[in-house]
Length: 142
Image: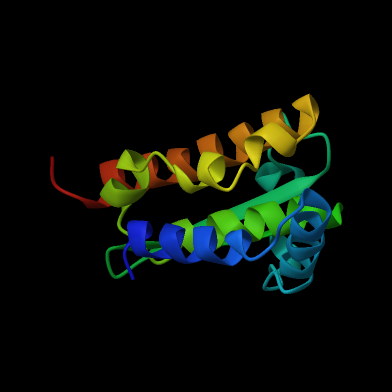
C-alpha cells in the first residue's frame, strides 16, 4: 500500500471515535500490538532524543524499502510509534522523505498531545526520515 492509502485508512479508523478518550484508548490498543523490537536494539544507540519517554527505533533497508521496529516504555507513545511504523515501514526512502504525514493533523493527534509528547512525535518523525535519508544516500544512485 502507498503512504496516502495507509494514511486514509488511519483517518477512517480514528473517525469511528467521537471523543478523544476513545481515541487515546485506541492508541493504547495500538501500543499493545506494536511488534516486538529485537532486544539488541534497546540500547542508547537506538534511543530517540527529544522524547519524554524512552523510545528505541531501529531501521533496516531491504529490497529498496525501509523497515522499522520500535519500542517505548510508555503505552501511548508505543501507539503513536506504531502508527508511524504502519505508515512508513515497507516504503521507499524517497517516499518516506517526501511525505508530510498529513494524517497526524487530520486525526487531531498533534493538538491533543502535551507539548512534550508533541516534541517526542516530531523527534520520532525526524529520526525515521533521517534513516531514510541515510539509506537513500548509501544505496540509491544520485
